[in-house]
Length: 384
Image (cartoon, rainbow, N blue to C red):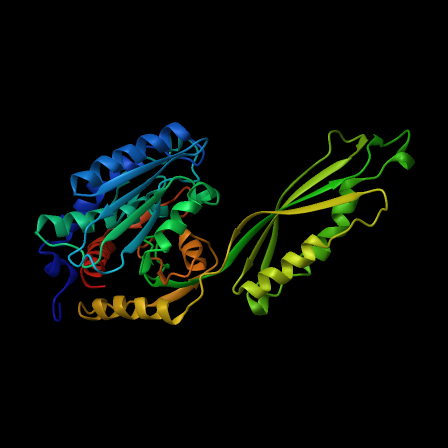
């Protein structure tokens, strides 16, 4: 690889490499797949299954009622004695059905746009296309590959946890083609993410006639919010956000119930558990009000372990031979990579495309980055 470029190593010019990836991802983007759209997610999963089977994969589908369909695709490697690499990807997006009407797939001068194109359908397309490129040249990955393509990552990947465990038990490491950092760096650390539901039960009464008989759930919530936010420790990287609040039925009724959703992010598990203990210990100030806190989602942090560093250095050394400086970084967002790291595997995340607008109306990937990402993925499959 030394002294060449990603395009030269691929044997493709930049336009051809770019167009291969775009041709792969376009029909996936044009199949809108919001989380919990079981029909749409199943349809796209079936399409992708056909594509990877054409490349020689053995596939197993797992129906997830109410969510869609998870897919495992196994590719053989040149050395069957080696433990596999796991490739983690998801096909659900945060965009509702109908988004294509105002955010269609389109290719502009420097970017391609569309719902889910950045997070993370292009990343999956890069991984599949890397296998296709190797296949077309009579080459194979060094290790067997296990692709786990999930349907509910944006809402916690609850339907796929057993699939992660089964793959982690037999695998060497995990590669995650989630979007890269904004500057193109891969992700060697992620904050852990926990989501909590806070429910307060009081007693309703007419706000004008019998306010003395009421126990206001909103007033109790207002008293608790400063105590919740005081648990933050920005210096330690721990952040807390109360992002959604529901309460009340009418302005003239003292509310009997209030609900809040709390997002907690932490760099290390000890911080997450500190906050967890304090949240579960929250009590109402009024003796007749009740507070209930439950953790509804949890992903531990992706920690920069020696195994993670080894994977990163391998990728960095490949990039250096193409005169590309591949950096590393940490992000506050979670991914399935965090779940696999909790199961003991080294994880290299952020191998997907550069771009921006994740979860937003300007979601896009940068075209000039695609040849490098395709070559890097293929080279990792062939050399790790």
